[in-house]
Structures are given as C-alpha cells and as structure tokens.
Image 1 (cartoon, rainbow, N blue to C red):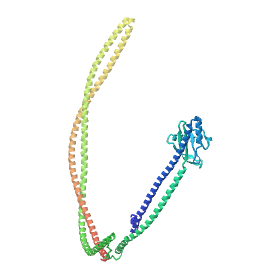
Image 2 (image 1 turned 120 degrees about the horizontal axis):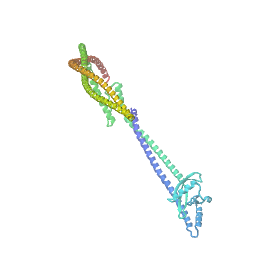
Image 3 (image 1 turned 60 degrees about the vertical axis):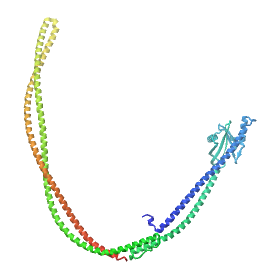
Length: 558
C-alpha cells in the first residue's frame, strides 16, 4: 500500500494543490537567487577589474612621468654622463605621491639607485627575496610592465597584495617603477558583495511572504473543492454501509443530476443497485431448485455407491487370480533363465576347450616340425664329423711323417758333431711338436667319436618323439571333432531355452500389464466410491448452503 493510498481524498486534494505551489515558489526563489548571484558576481568582477585598471593606469602615468624626468637629465647637453645619472637619481628621490608612495630605480646588477623613503638603503641588494623580486620586475618591464605580488605593508604590518609598473631606461639599462597596495580594492569589492547578499536576503523574504499568502489561498480553495467532492462520496459510503451492515435495503437511490463525475458515479451506482436487486430476485427463485436438485443428487449417489462396491469385490477376485498366474509365470521364467545361463556357460566352456585344443594342436605341429628340423641338422652334423675325422687322419699322417723327418734330422746332426748341435735342438723341438699334434688329434678323434654316438642316439630319440607327436595330433583331431559336436548340441539347447525364456518373459509382461490394469480398475473403483461419498456429502452441503442462501436473500429488501 502506497503512502497516497493511506490518505483520505481531502488530504490528497490538499497535497495536489500545495505541492505544485511550494515547488513553484522554491523554483522561482532558486532561479531568482541564482540570477542575482550570477549578475552580482559579474558586476563584482567588472568593478574589481575597473578599479584595478584605473590603479594600473595611474601607476603607468606616474612611471612615464618619472621616465621623462630621467630622459631629460640624460639628454641635458650641459651635464656629463655621471652628472646626468646623479641628477636623474636626485629627481627620482624627490617624486612622492599618494601619502608615502615613491619611485624606485635599479641597475642591471640589482643595485638600488633611488629609494626616496631612506636613501641610506641605496646600494647593492643582498636580500635573496628582494633580489628575486627585482629580477621579476626587470622581466615584467621587458613585457607590459605590470607585475602583481604579495609584500609586507609598513602601515599595517601585514603581507598584502601589491601591483607594480616598471620600465627600462634606454642606454643606461635602468629599471624604474613604482607600486601600490590594492587592499582597498578588495575592501570595496567586499562591501559591494555584502550589498548583493543583503539584496538576496530581501528578495528571499519577499518570495517567502508571497509563497505563504499563495499557500493560504490554495488551502482555502482546496478545502472548498474537497468538500464538494467528499460530500457525495460520504453519501455513497453511507449507503454501501447500510447495504453491508444495516437492513440491506436496495430501494434507495443516489442523486444523479448533473454532468460531473459525481453525477456519473450516482448513475452508475444506481444501475449497480438495480442489477443487484434483479440478481437477488433470481437467486431467491433458484434456491428452491437447488434444494430439489440436491435431494435427487443424494439419491443417485447412494445407488452409485452400491454398484461401485459390488464391482470392487469382483475386481479383487480377478486381481488375486492374475497375481497367482503372474507368480507361476515368473517361476517358469526364472527356471528358463537358469537353464539358459547354464547352457551359455557350457557353450562358452566348449568354445574355450576348442580354442585350447586348437592351440595345443598348433603347438604339437610346430614341435613336430622343429623335431624334424633338429633331426636333419644333427644328421648334417654327423656328416660334418666324418669329414673332420678324415682331416684328423691327414693331420695324424703329417705328424708321423714330421716325426720321422725330425728323427732323420737328429741322426744327421749327431753325425755332424759339434757343427750339428743347433740343428739337433731344432729337430728335437719339431719332434716334440709333432708328438703333441698327434696327441691333440687323438683327443679330437675321441671327442668326435663320442659326439657321433650321442648324435645318433639323439636322432633316434627325435624320431620317437616325432612319431608320438603325430599320434598326439591324431588324438587332438578326434577331441576337436567331439568338442564341435558338443558345441553344436549346446548351441541348439541354448536357442531353445532362449525361446522358452523369451516366451515366459512376454507372458510375464502380459500378466503384469493385466495386473496393473486390474489395479487401476480397483483404484478407479475406490476413487469412484470416494467420489460417490464426496458427492453424497456435497449434496447434503449443497442443501445446507441453499438454506443458508435463502436466509441471506431474505435479508435484502427488493
């Protein structure tokens, strides 16, 4: 609820009158004060600029006069340069104006050339602040000549704003000038600002007075207009209160003469009351019909409830039979699933056995091939050993021949006596070498004979292994054929069991759907029974409401 909706209509009308008046007065006051301030500030700026311009013009005229005095002394033909400079300084010291103001002069080296208040202070400038100021004055003299700064005022002892004008004397390079304090200008401007503020206060007081008068007039107008609006509304409120809380007399009417909104409200209200009258009459006539219909509805509800209860009993019996059938189908489906699972396991094991036998067959075949290959290599190795034996025979014959030659050489060396001693030693070494070669050949022959014996035994064992592997392959082939037959039989059993399980599952689903339909029928029957009970109760409630409605309609006067 907004703030306005909590107010009475009279208060809203007064607010509607007062708020625009106050806003208008405040806006007018703000605009007026802003204009006065803006104009006053502009006037103050013009006043300050005018006073400062006049003060600057006076300074310029004084400095121009002093410059003329210096130039007269400079251009005097009867004076030397030193005499002219001293004469110019004397003339500058004699110039005084404005109750103590004076003309000052400085050389390029910042030496004070003329200081009328105290000539003893003339000479070199040692104060850094004064040196900085003199340089600034020289810089201003090269431009427009004016320079503003703050400087202590001997009269007041305070630092106050000051304006100076300086110029340069040609050839000599002197800077001459003067300055005045402009504090009095600020005082004049402050006095003018005080006058403007007083004018603003006076204007605001006048606006407030006018606003108060306008507000009082607006209040009187608002009260009068509020009465013309609220009086008919109070009449409407009283009639509505009588209808709601009083005797309910619908025969009264509001005045509806005129063309304003209140007359239109009266006409609409009267039309509303007429419509309510007609509605009350129709409701009174319909109430009896409602009571009769309620009794008929109660009778039909009782008959329907008896039928629904009988139907619910029969449906419960059907539901019990279907539940038993569904349980049997579920048991069959479970057994079929168990058989299907066992058949699947047998099929899987048969397939795994077939793969294992196939892998074993491949391994045995590979082993047989490797045994055959090894047997061939061993046979080749036996042939190579025969060749080695032949080579050893050659080596043995060579050693025998070498031994014989060494013996002959030893005999010849013995015959030679002392000259054949060295040859005899070589013959002994050769004979020893031949002996060792013969022994090594005998050892190799012995090892080769043993190797040949073992090789022949290995060939015989490999032949036996090859024969047994062939027999194993044949047995594996028989086992493979048997497993394939088992695999086909298990697959056939698996297909038949799958069909049985699928059929049982479908029958279970159908039984479940039938069971759900029966449950829905039972629920619908129960809801119907509940609805019939509610309808019966509603018919009694309708009869009671019709009686209450008859009593309510009887309260109105139509």
